[in-house]
Image (cartoon, rainbow, N blue to C red):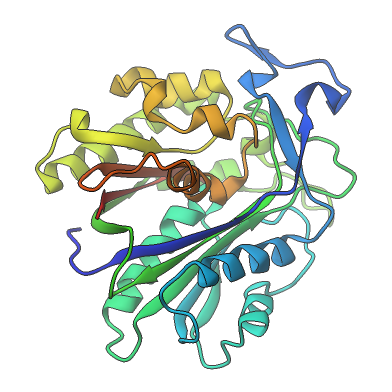
Length: 319
């Protein structure tokens, strides 16, 4: 889908303390020769996910050109693995004093951040009386800290990210969005246990190794469609903001099939944070902004992926 007049106006993040990966106290998972998944550290929060999301949202608002305005919609990409708030977007509404906003929780797994950006853009484009919307995303692992390694040897971390989407101005404009999915894989997310409180989710316990080819093809399809619609080549993209999976998975599913060098991703920063579910792409973009790497005219592609299997590509151009 081609876009006109939709911008990323500002970003906010909340990342708690970083803990060296060696302190996990377990045998390091080794995959394709990468001990600890190539991660250096991971972030651990002592506060609930919705509070982290609120802090990130406040920072995004403060960094924006829309302070004091109504943000509608507010879309909260939730991937909480523990229920600390039944409807966490209500907390964000309260602390931002957004009484009259359209606000809801979106669950699209690790693709949630990118899906939320496109959702806000679609609704905002059809809202003549509102100039900006808010995306926020958060993930907090269980408080005891155990079991942070997923079956795919991704290291689950805590944190939050937010972005103000504007119809007026911003540091980057949305050029193209593309969405694809593999609904036949939804069974990987079904609980195989009927007993309350017990979870046996194939994607969590077994990973997606058997379906790697299908996942890779979905990613390639979405990227190719995005480039074709924008009439540019993959070489024209300055940076790719992806998820933060195990380095071997990043190489297998993304880097080798596309030929994209790892230097064009934000892995060097994300490996210090861990995999923060739906926040990774926004965290990567925030890193590029904070380190002054973005230049006018550059193209940046956010590639979200997760669930069973969902891929969202967002092509941005720096202004």
